[in-house]
Length: 245
Image (cartoon, rainbow, N blue to C red; front, top):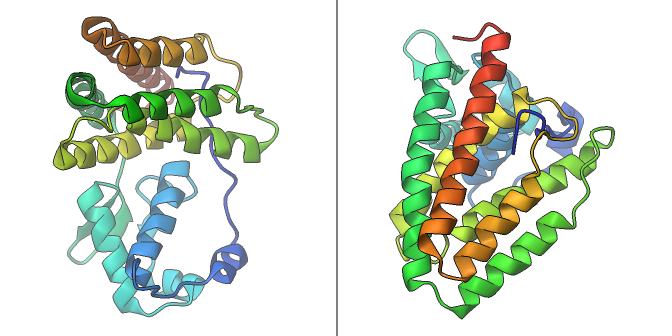
């Protein structure tokens, strides 16, 4: 990932969102489905940082009652993507250099630790999952003029990073890493320039994956740390050019 390796999915229209429909299927409540849809809208930049979330408009758009809508927003508050203030209501969480720096620092600590633990106790299935995830990611085209390819790459990119650490055996750690990845992707997908990268991101992913399955702990964890750190540095530089403090 780099300052030229971003993508943002095409915004959905109100009609497209509403036509998808929501129903409690016994596994995912309407609130959780709404949370997923709103989460993607925030991460992709469809809902702008700091913008007010009008409950009446959102209720009409999604064709749901206020109860599941509030449930979905509550989930996003706990994820750090939405804020609620008395007398001001719900807003998409703002962005800042300080927030990005904190996210980057925590990713460097927690994700690297999770990879170290995964290499220590992960099994053969974990190794195979990494290589399959890497193969899918590296074989997926990214074309800035075709948003659908960018959206697919983003999905597989997230899958790769989570698969790397999936063998750690620590559910809470995986949960926190997933939250941080969401928060990081919000910055990367919205602000990075959608052109060819200044780094060989595919090669970096391959180096991390190969080091992981070889159980070369120091090599793989350092490669992952550098990968995360460079992304944070590129993002900070890009935000600074936009006057964001």
